[in-house]
Amino acid sequence: MPPGSAAPASPGPGGDSGPGATAYVAGAGGPAVTTPGSPARVVVYVTGKVRHPGVFVLASGARVADAIEAAGGLRKGAKPGGINLARRLVDGEQIVAGSPAAADAGLASVPGSTMAPGPGVVNLNTATAEQLDALPGIGGVIAQRIVDYRNAHGGFQSVDQLKEVPGIGDRKFAEMRDKVSV
Image (cartoon, rainbow, N blue to C red):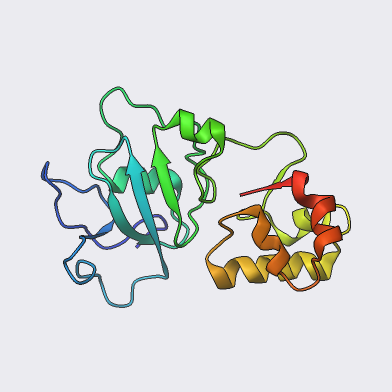
């Protein structure tokens, strides 16, 4: 299967759930059947102004646009709401489509669902170790610990979680707090 695709989803109320997705249905006891031997997958929750909100399983490497398409696409007249449609998905994230108020206020608590942060601000959920290394007081070792923490915990839900990363104490956290986002 090409990147950005997964096993077909069960049709939604409109007869389609979007190509390349496996839909989870609340109370159904698990996902729709997927193809054995398919590539690694990411599970994302797509909500907001989409036709069929829900939890979808997509191929590793899929983009935000693929997740929105899996949810049946945006509702008529809806706009993405400041989401970077080209960003790769992170397992366990929530995508709130068509919600500019939440995105502008930074209320969305998931990687990449908010508008791009201001200049010099690094997103903890998408930054590489090299980008994190450029932050004040962060060297290569701490940068890698941040990436490892992110991978082990499914991403950062708040900037305050940085204090849980070994080597980041109150002082170091205070130095970098305004230079990072989730």
